[in-house]
Image (cartoon, rainbow, N blue to C red; front, side, top):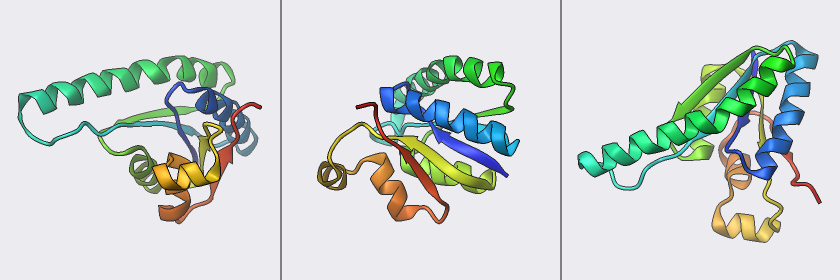
Length: 138
């Protein structure tokens, strides 16, 4: 089993990181850091260049998080996926038999999240695993 965390360096994700590290440490589970981003389009060199750029951004985004997780003595797995964030988290959770998916919120209203399609809102619709939404700092 594992704990899966959606991570993108946003303030909400950084707050969720602390919660996920604590949870993984208490349960003695690995923490799977997931960065998902899907480039627009789907063909050609421009698409592949965009895909490579997003992948590099994802790897850089999780570097600091990995250092924090390692410092806490928690095992870490990193997945940078070419998929929309919510779908990437569900796929990673399935692969790693996650107990829970942890995500931060951006502090937007629930109605705005529902209309615009926030990752936490989407996860609550598509995940068959528990989703822990960590509120943005007030």
